[in-house]
Image (cartoon, rainbow, N blue to C red; front, side, top):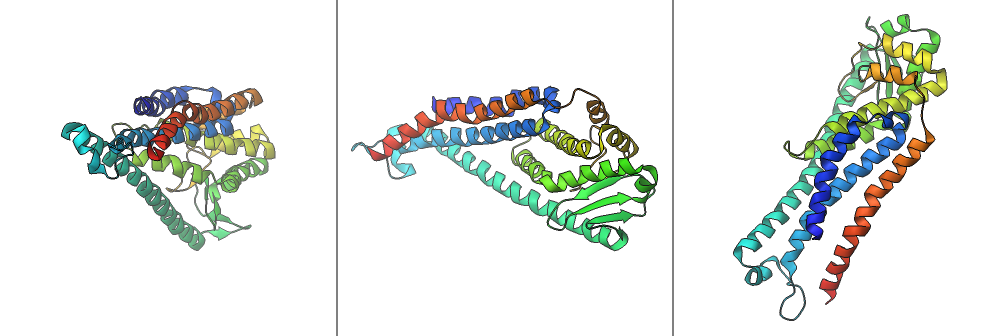
Length: 306
């Protein structure tokens, strides 16, 4: 029953829940709390999937004649029979493969992203004009602004952005990009990208990745609003809306610009919505653990000390 409950939780948390949350508009009023909720859902889904496989595979260690668990995978063969034993071994193998794919995906995404950023940073340092610390100006007519996170971070502006933006708009767009660098939003996106890449195409969904990308931009928008106000930021976003950024960078424009500009003229963030999202995130992690994982772990502990 524990294995079945874990399977149901994994399917619900990786399918219907992300689909519903991605369509909701209330996260726009509490982007930081909504990102925490998305992280909790992703973590709970991964843990549920692993727990389902481990719970089924643990049946390979059924108690032997002396009441103790069998000491090897093949020890349960006589008790369970070939068909059931083979099915459990396959479940264990799939669980291990998923775990390996997740680890490999994390490493691949991290290495590839940092390699692209390092190459583009070197190019920007070569062709761009250095201004203040970490700021580079590119001789490009198209208005654009983006940042390259990392140990040697860069904020990049085009000459077109400098000509098109007023002083307060420029301050807003710079505050936006520096908020990305300060909060290391790139690490949040890397986690969701790795989970998306690790799971097979038949079961993975891009809803979480797209939603978190938009929320990260909204979170940086909030920092820019505190620094320069909503109107200059809205004008800067519209001016730079057609700008493009290289892979691995975080850009103020291009992703949900219309939605974000409308949000700047809306009701603003809500402490009540944020509190509800934090409580939901805690519940997503704690309730399944208490209701399913603790009884299963207790029974497994009893089995091994019998």
